Image (tube, rainbow, N blue to C red):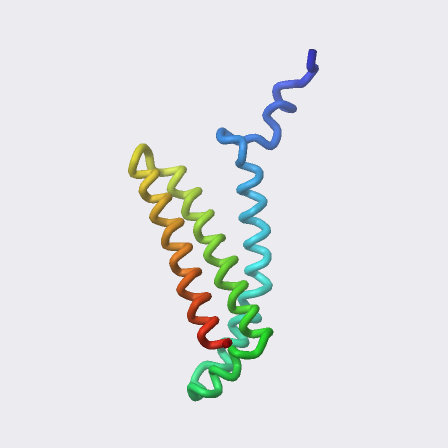
Length: 123
């Protein structure tokens, strides 16, 4: 026989038993973005307004290319998880399923297009 209190059984579990996991994933991606985005804005801002060849030279270096890929990937995952949580809270039925699929598809499409464009620049 297990002697667990109601609180101990419920701790860390949301209605779908993944509430804590989603919360921590959002927190980790938010902190990662808080550090990466200002550095990315500095790199992007330094390339802004320059000629085509200078921009290609900037983003063909390893650090700006990897940073751009990370910001794109982490940012789109953060967007997809946040939008999915919002949709799950406010939509019901088949509209909820369709919107979640749409948001995840948009996230993957933007990530794929961005990484393809970055690869074309960097290589």
